[in-house]
Amino acid sequence: MKKSKNTVYLIEDDDDLAKALETLLTEENYNCFRYPTAELFIEESAKLKESFNFQINSALPNCCLIDVRLPNMSGINLFNKLIKQNGKKLSPVIFLTGHGDLQMAVDSLKKGAFDFLTKPYKTEDLLQTIQNGIEESRLRIEQHQFVSAFEKKLNLLTSREKELIEPIISGLSNKEIAAKFQNSIRTIELHRARVFEKLDLQSAVELAKFIERFNSFYADLNN
Image (cartoon, rainbow, N blue to C red; front, side, top):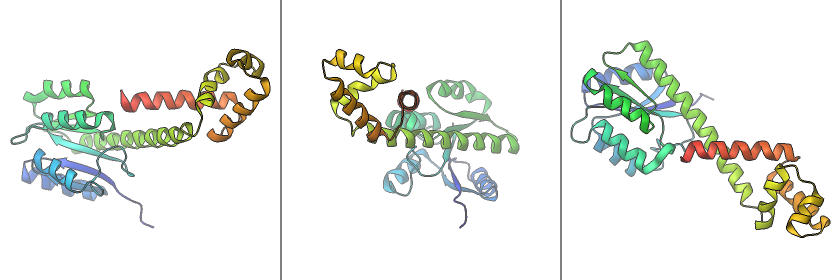
């Protein structure tokens, strides 16, 4: 079976440059979709929501290559619109910028853009930056998948079972937890067993690692 290609969404109004980039990326085994305006990119993403998916819940790594200076809606305004709608769930955005736009590109990094390239750029620098963006996308997708899967398991827990997570990972014994919640030790043993069963984990140490990982990934994706 042929390996699925990673995707680059190219928003560039210079037709000759866009065609050259599309040819280069296709030769490098990327799927490349190019759009001459920000408006068309937004329109297509809304119209083809199921198949055109540049957010983190895409199954395959992808990134957006956006020219800062676009007609009507600029690349920066497009990015601001996307980041407002999707937050860090947005795929990595790489800006193509002229020297006069450098400060705008730097400011966009503070808002969550992945990187920028100043024109004229070297082909090897472009390809390396895109590859870095794809790897970041892969990481975000893995984080998202872990958070989603573990969140589903957490939702299987009752309110009392969720309350037991903190004392369990803090290393309290069943006797100490029973005293804390004014339950019998046997009741706590049963709740504890159900926590591990529903989360498909074997020990307090493993639970602590998963909770720490979940909290860290969740913060990365949502803050």
